[in-house]
Image (cartoon, rainbow, N blue to C red; front, side, top):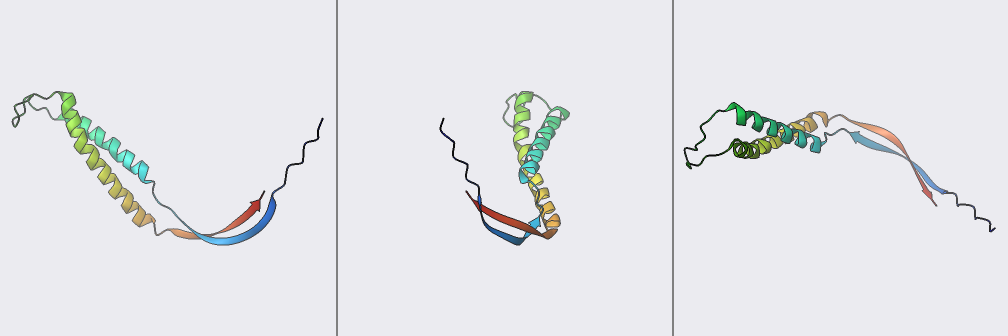
Length: 111
């Protein structure tokens, strides 16, 4: 049986200690998803809270509750996402000033 060669060990190249700035920022995707969810929830509430007539006075067409929910959701989701983005930007401006300097050890190896 042939002998297996020993695996190569990583060779130490350099070690740098650096100072970096760490700052906290909100996760925009979470805020936008929450805004969209709240927009859908608001559309659902508005669809069933407003008891209107079945006949549209402008188009003389009868819309089902599902169609009304869809139209309302289109508007409410956009408004919810925009408001959530504004809240996230406000959080970033108020909390963004909280930066700090930290020391990091940057090691580099080659195989």
